Length: 283
Image (spheres, one colour):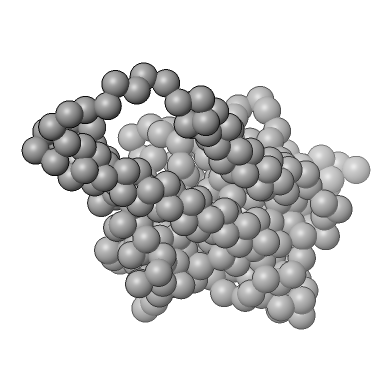
């Protein structure tokens, strides 16, 4: 039973190693900003956080492969060297101090080797640097609303495009009518909340995933290092249309972002209500 379990673990690790070494993992199979059919590995890393996540994942995969190969070698030695036919007179040894110390100390060292980069990555994700831009993402059933508090409280909704609304090149179930637009190489602080139930704002290429909880403001950040259009989805089961509230982020140059801001302020300008118009007329 143990031999079979060890072989299954080894096969799984070998498949993971094929993903990383033979197929190139995220580099060969995942296009920037969107997943591919039959994809193996992560999407291309676009932010420092996602790059660290990918490196940590690959490091763990190598470490697990080494451990699995070592265990497999030990199993094969036991199978062929110490079976009844090859070793009819078994040893009566019951203790070996060095081996007992080794199988206690070595796993502790392995856990330390994993823990140090893990804590460093967690700190990188949670310690938000000074932001160049702040965006507030608000989850609703079932679409996202966005605010740019640094720019005259610019506000708009982003609703998934239906099949008959898609333009050439826009992915089905991922494209939205309005996209979050940010400048390249800018540190963007994202404030995440919700109005009804728990949602989750997730962008795989950014290494970003944050719960949107009603009545609570959660914070995260990203710094996109290349331009393009990147897609994500709500990653918390939030109701019947959970699968239909995607996220679109468009990363542009500084000049394009400034131009978009001017256009967006006009396009998404608040329309005064009848009451506001009446009040203003009376004044």
